[in-house]
Length: 518
Image (tube, rainbow, N blue to C red; front, side):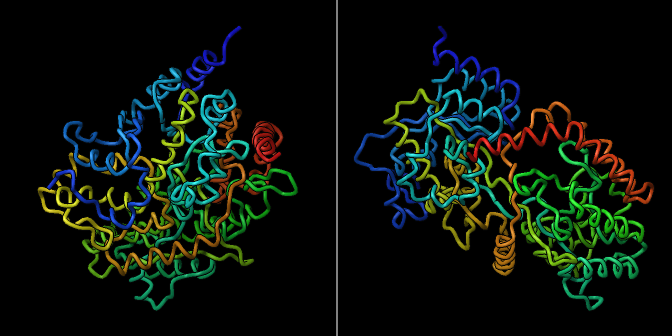
């Protein structure tokens, strides 16, 4: 009979090889050591050795005489043995580590909650961490929506590394404030006001020489979702569309299956016919290409987020136009008063503890992650050891000499802070306090208008095996917006999807949702 210990590594390898997305003495002080010291694990006990593996983007931290690592180990009462694996090799290395079962105490699953993770949980590969979280202080600050997104049957088998829940990607519309002022226009709050602004930009040509692009968006590859354009979330929510999926009396409904979808496409069609949308939109590949047009001074509006209001972007624009200013449209209201913002997964990666780790060690590892997520270590990630890596933390920014910055870049203190602090203002990245205030105010507004996707943390194998399932529908939708096809053609493709692969995809997702909500 095959033992469970043997079964888990063998199946884990099979599952994950396919895809698992994804001044310096001992008295040196960190920025908040006196105010946060009580959060450190008990120093009276012997240090806990934690062997961890995590993903690496860029160069690894110094391995010899790393004072940042030493400082964090002392305050956290641990000995860290961290394997930093380059991102391009991480999937394979992680597969091997999970297969071995007992190679590490702590692993970062960069794919988060997917079907591979769920299957591994069911096979007993990882500890259920739910009971170990009861006395944590900082991990409990992670939004409940994030825990829900990463849970399996309501239990936490992984600790999410929190990121922004609201306003990431194309959560807001970014607009040229100086163009609005030039024509005495307020920042638009409704779809009708936005349409009027775009028409003024088109007619007045503030960029000059006929170069003005009122609204820039980009095409889509139709994998996972149909077109015609990406970068239109604020408009979609204004027309009352769900966040990809919604549940209606227990029935799963896809966004394009709603009557509101036609109203949204009709608005795009009207805007396109009037020349309000970038003529290059169908061939633009991503948001960065759209953002580049905005920063080049030719586009008036694009979908970004609060982080686009930084001094860096303003400076780039001012190189083109010294009078340039940027504003953010927090929420766009539609004809029936609808508005909203995407609720994202809210995390990148899950820390899991293999079931081979002794239970008495699990709590110590969780306690260290809780300690890592403290305000003290959020500051430490920016400054390292004061006197060695930085002189001080001022207005959230490290003050460093050239020598300190050089040492900071070598030691990379943030790499050893394995769990980051939950921060609702993660997209508020400006150093300028006036801009920072605007960013935070915008994030406060949209956090009250989140629209969740009930199937966000579930995956359809049918969809994965049929990545082209939206291709025909997307092509027809694009033609409709460009005025080259009729609505009946679009509806025909929606019906075809619903009655074939779409029905299978819907059932798969709904089954997983119902299994988790028994």
